[in-house]
Amino acid sequence: MKTQYYTASSLDGFIATQDDSLEWLFTLGTPSESSYPEFIAEVGAIAMGSVTYEWIQRNAEKAQAEAGSSWPYAQPTWVFTKRSLEAVPGADIRFFSGDAATAHAEMRVASQGKNIWIVGGGDLAGQFYDAGLLDEIIVQLGAVTLGQGKSLLPRRILSPALRLTAVRQMGDRMVELRFEVRKPCA
Ligand SMILES: NC(=O)c1ccc[n+]([C@@H]2O[C@H](COP(=O)([O-])OP(=O)(O)OC[C@H]3O[C@@H](n4cnc5c(N)ncnc54)[C@H](OP(=O)(O)O)[C@@H]3O)[C@@H](O)[C@H]2O)c1
Image 1: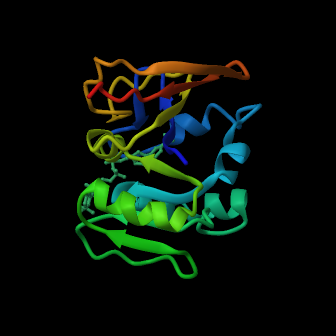
Image 2: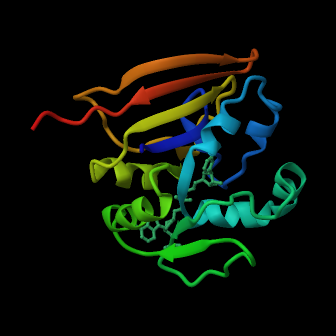
């Protein structure tokens, strides 16, 4: 069982524009040889921040077209928020406010031995990293730059550095990089 941050990023390290647009990502087209089907098959629980949750709700039609449902995930999903948000009817959504370690303990139980996916944003992935709970970062880097936006991972990770474990070309506009998060020596 791994806790994985799986996301797409511009070449200069942004997962969305400052105003939460992902249009730049869609201009890259559907990547050939996507790892998503094999990735999602191994996921047992999901975490996301409220801005990501609200983005999915605003773009429910896209999810409907691609996944056949306005909510794209079958797995129980922890939505981090201090606000009172509306749930999506029929979706297993658990609104959560607090520290990543507490949520992670609940998610471990729910995931029944499968992986935990941190969808984003970057700071939420950083909260799991800070708690020593992030095992892997899988990022599809697109052949575009944004100049500014929402950071892929707003943390300094210097020592130990991440360990690159796999590189996979996805057509001519994307490359997927996999990094193991190495734990500091005790
Ligand atoms: N490129 C990709 O593949 C990809 C993947 C994922 C997301 N995205 C996009 O990236 C952007 C991410 O935006 P973001 O980084 O601003 O936000 P985010 O992580 O989606 O949401 C941040 C918000 O979550 C809540 N939150 C975070 N930690 C919390 C905690 N410990 N307890 C309680 N609440 C907590 C806070 O909001 P409140 O308390 O105010 O609700 C916080 O402002 C979105 O536009 C999303 O669509 C892109």
